[in-house]
Length: 143
Length: 369
Image 1 (tube, one colour):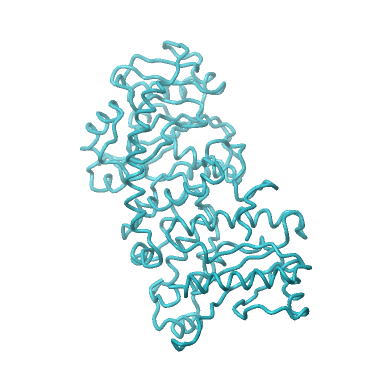
Image 2 (cartoon, rainbow over the protein chains, first blue to last red):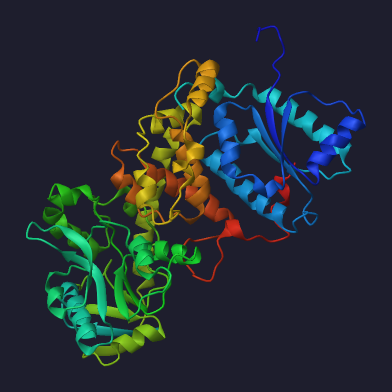
């Protein structure tokens, strides 16, 4: 990247199949604009996301990691996102306690009808990461 | 108030007499305890059925060759103990065992748990270089006074959970000035009372000396703060982690000895975590270099997310690390930070669910952005 170019973060997004992925789809088909920083990965449920995935992304140099699922109470598998929530709370705390930047991790609830919200989340998160700058893990050799 | 049994013997003799009584009366068929297993004073956990073998038993020896919680799990896996066994565990070993039971890796059936108000243990290396034996008199002196012996494991010095939670019988050690003269057994449960029922000794209603224990706790807390400050300074961003874990050789010894890490097929030893030539190539293209073996920070952070919630801070991982990474110090600090969020003390109650496999509908709403 040249110095005069604006820093465009790379954000890995784990989107649940039933809500958030459909929401992202809706954002696309509705032609709502949002930054091209998001790399989506579709998972069947947000609770499929082992905290290890998030850590691997972080240490692998992703500038941000987004986990998105159905709103609490709306999980396709009844309770999946409640587990996600607890895990994510714990993961964020671990990342924070060990001295890493927990602001690079984000959990959002986006339903299938919330194309607007998905675009908003993507834009907000991208802006926040832009403020934080690039993930220093990216350039580290010895991880 | 709890029932208590008092024997007019030193702690060392008292516990042995008690165990001998249990075996000879047939109340238990086996005793699980630390024992000298050779003349050069090697100490190991042993399961004893012959009362004569008890003469070399050293139930409260300040060493933890293996976390006995892990051993009890192996011992009771699937079917449970066939015959009644009395097991002498340290509080953190007991808590580790309880955490394993929650994960269906053992049961308390047919087990009588005897634990103690624990003064902490030495690092395992003191047994290897035979310095443990020399440190013993000083150790017992500090136990009597309720002080922190300088020879303890770092996490023992900072341990606030020295009173066992779910033991059938608690033996009074730490802060008890009279351990040379008396042995006091607190009979916490019906099971514990049944064990001691016909034993010759003074029975009474007694209470822990809470005030004294509170004072000890204060000392431990001060020590904990010191430990956390020290390790907290090192845990500073990616650079800090490289500094700490950079010398990790990837032996996974810390997970092998961990009482909570029970998976037979560990994620980090599965082919998924193996680096293929193409992985190396990608990494090299991206970073221009790679540490080998790779993924050591990932391993430790990953293990934190898997077992941090149940870490009992026994310190076993510190002891086995061949390159002296303060794994236990880090796990104690970070583990405690998440345990606090869920108001969870690992191993406190066998009925309590592990926070990460349960949930409440209304909680942590603020985490969603």
